Amino acid sequence: MTTHRIYSTAFASVYPLYVAKAERKGRTKAEVDEIIAWLTGYSPEALADQLAKGTSFEDFLAHAPQMNPARSSITGVVCGVRVEDIEEPTMRDIRYLDKLIDELAKGRPIAKILRS
Image (cartoon, rainbow, N blue to C red):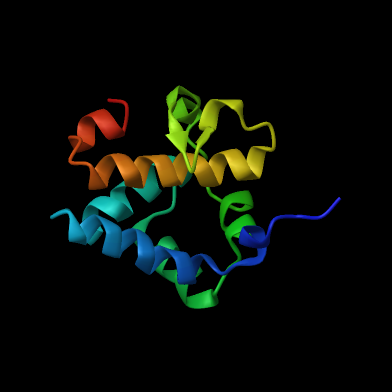
């Protein structure tokens, strides 16, 4: 079985794309960081450390301090695929993050994005 290319991609190469997408829509890097912290449990310092190390996306998620158990409440479509229907756990977590960033870029209030 082959793994998807995104797994070995450095999270640091994807992170600026998340920030740029949010900023194009008037949101902030701090909001992106808040979403990542909510999903993964990374503190700002730990996130900066992971970005500096060039950690792969797969390792970034696998070694996350505390994946939020409420992430299973994230539903919807990303890239034409329903996130709740993705069976492979790492890909599902990647798509959860994609979905949260999409919601941020669409102007959804941060409290609703974080399922508060």
